[in-house]
Image (tube, rainbow, N blue to C red; front, side, top):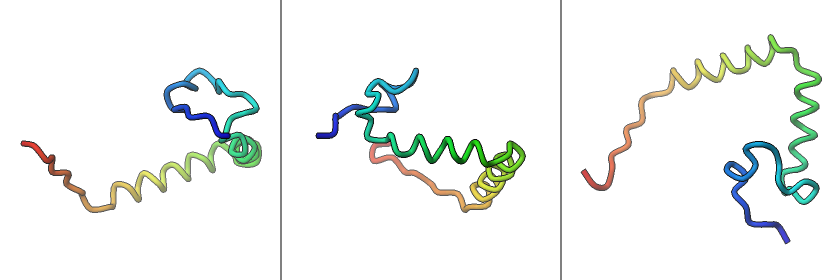
Length: 66
């Protein structure tokens, strides 16, 4: 059974579930990405994402209560 925990809050200083973490598989993928990708490539990926975000049209959010 998967534990019900908000990882964004509980695991700020590191995973509190250890081997029981439901996101454990992503650690290996992230570690491999960091080991195989140069910092310059990571910065280029981030810059491309930033440019894409800036080029998207503005999305207005109208609150239910004004």
